Image (tube, rainbow over the protein chains, first blue to last red):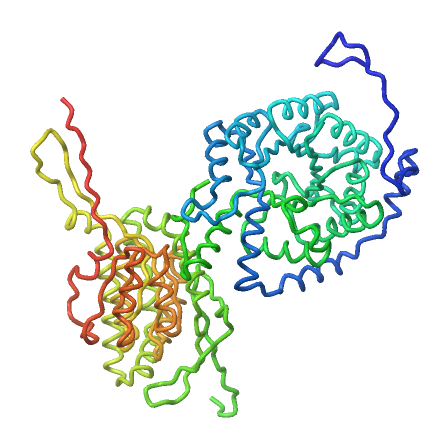
Amino acid sequence: MTHVLDPDAPAAAIPPRREPLAPYRDVTRSDAAFRAFLHGLPGVDQVGAESRVAVLGTRSIKTTAKAWALDAAISMVDLTTLEGSDTPGKVRSLAAKARRPDPGDPSCPQVAAVCVYGDLAGVARDALQGTGIHVAAVATAFPSGRASRAVKLADVRDAVANGADEIDMVIDRGAFLAGRYLDVYDEIVAVKDACGDAHLKVILETGELVTLDNVRRASWLAMLAGGDFIKTSTGKVSPAATLPVCLVMLEAVRDFRAATGRQVGVKPAGGIRTTKDAIKHLVLVNEVAGPGWLSPDWFRFGASSLLNDLLLQRQKLRTGHYSGPDHVSVD
Amino acid sequence: MSTDRLAVRKTYKLYVNGAFPRSESGRTYAVTDAKGAFLANAAWASRKDARDAVVAARAAAGKWSGATAYNRGQVLYRVAEVMEGRHAQFCEEVAAGEGLSSSRARAAVDAAIDRWVWYAGWTDKLGAVLGAANPVAGPYFDFSVPEPTGVVAVLAPQRSSLLGLVSVLAPVLAGGNTAVVVTSRTRPLPAVTLGEVLATSDVPAGVVNLLTGDAEEIGPWLAEHDDVDAIDLTGAPAGCAMELERLAAGSIKRVVRPPAEEPDWSADPGLTRLTPFLETKTVWHPMGL
């Protein structure tokens, strides 16, 4: 098969499928075996998951614990702008905010990464040079993922060449829901190869997966295929990140590390706007996955407006009186 | 009416963002009449209720200040209409709370509704009276217009529970500001009813937020709040006012100082309560050729 991207190229030889980590080497030997494995994962008790997050959501995090949580949450933010109207200027101002979220307070930590579309990754990289802040780019025909594999891989290589050191890919939900799990697996493996040294975050788009059972299957699939992070959503579909979904994903990374020794990060994205939500997520991380995940290397928030609320809360804690939206930047 | 009917005991709630939430703290307190007999329970607002009210008032500020002055006047007049429909209830609550005879309570309620209508009429006249086309020594059209200050915290009078409340709240709204009001602590019921009036008239959610409770407790949080643009200390408890002014200075708020003692609210207020919550914007426009 030839492709529009390079009509004269000979059809590439299909390499042998890469096997997942032990002890799951043989689960991808055939479509039937992979389906049997994914459907053999324990079912999720949805009512149980909802009641567990409801209970954990009532934890009272105050004073010094809250101060720690605020700084931790700020340092875990992937400051995101994914609009058709993004400009280099907007990305540069976002980068400035990423370096110094609260210009009035030098003790405020910087965020983990700036997340942009692939064509703006170069602008972000230039603006963030020497800061240690990562440049994340969405790729693979984000947000729908509806393009041929050649286009998706070209999208990834382009973003990496532009300077992205983290790639946020979307899975092919159509193939996943149709039960073609190996197609999804192969695609993630191919994208991982195209990433080179860049970290790969796999967006499951849980709002389109319908059930928590599917969320667990997709999480395992993405981890087996070599994803460095599993991410809930694109932010373009509602519902986006919810606590029960996050719970299931955290259980998956915990169980995956126990079985294989490889640690995978989690990134809820979309719909987390308040400090209260962020702290509930941190409680969930600590209680479900464990304190080993409470670091920007293993847990991130994909957000744009969340950062301002975190900063307002931080100012309130520092000064003792309520702050207002005039005291943080607009974007 | 049969005497063995069970009493319907009321526990009122706050009025924040167009809804009637309980206090975040879960606290309530008993409200008694002038002789000490139980009337109802009222919500006892906490600093977090004040915080939520400021967020609601800020969110509502754009729409309310952006409405035409004519439209604001119509909306406020509609409030007076609904108040008129609740006339009897207001009379009863004012009489019980302030210990007035029924005729004097009726006079106070009449005056309160008239005061509201009076301020409703001012909305589209402020520009003409307080604005100006300024004669300047240059080729410019130069004119000044009054604009709303923004979010105003109001500590309502402690004694005059309806007429006093209307006299401090209506001018804030007429100027296009949104309000967070801490009501009289001991006489909050007319304010609660006013909240029900506002909820069933055309005032957008968040433009008025009524917190029943203790101004001494909530006042400092509002005075210090960075997102409150002005504070009216009329009902500040004795001895607190200076400290509240000091706290308000941190964010350079407009401050209306409390009178030495609560005034007679039936007197003609003039523009004295409208102007503190208006900012004058002056525009220089080249005349061209």
